[in-house]
Image (cartoon, rainbow, N blue to C red; front, top):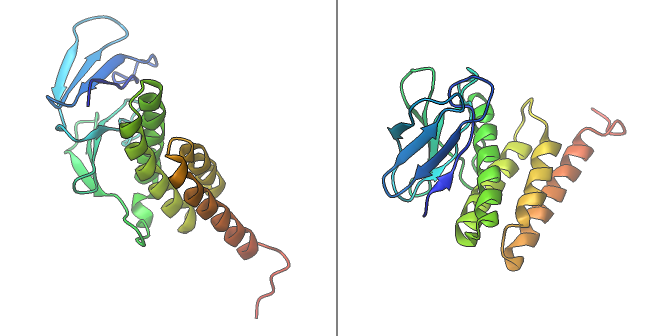
Amino acid sequence: MLDVPVPGDYDGDGTPDTAFWRPSEGNWYIQPSSGGNQHVVQFGRDGDFPVPSDFDRDGKMDLAVWRPSDHTLRVRPSSGVADWTLPTPQDGEDPRPADRDALALFATALFELASSLEAAGRADEAVTAARESIKVFLRLAESPGELEPAAFISRVVELAGHLPASEAVAPTQDAVAILRRLAEANSPSRTTG
């Protein structure tokens, strides 16, 4: 994988910083928008996908990578607390309620990465990111929680456009089936015993 642009507000000043991740080194290169020296931070390795987001909710982007080889999200919080790892849900696994917010941020970061990779002409990498993002969004939409399932479903339908045509139909059909089940479960005409 070539350098991957990962712009975001890494210093919390409200302005996106210019940044990229170099997979061959596992280095993040961050140029603050306010000027000053470029920061180079080693986090991740070749084969990982960069998925920065504000996981610790402190107003700054956290360094994060998804490691497909072991299905984990690895995060280095900007707040200075210890790095943490979260397994991403696999087929048939429901996310733990405590993990839903982090997984939603992760899936959203992968969604954005898939679009960036496709725009850069890196279709194979975009497909890998889209597949995982779809899987997580579908698991989040199916499992109970406070996050809005319809938002996840709309992302799944959009992500299906990044997949080869032979794969694009199934996630969309899964999304429609989930919406139908949710609508039926919440229908006022359903009677309770």
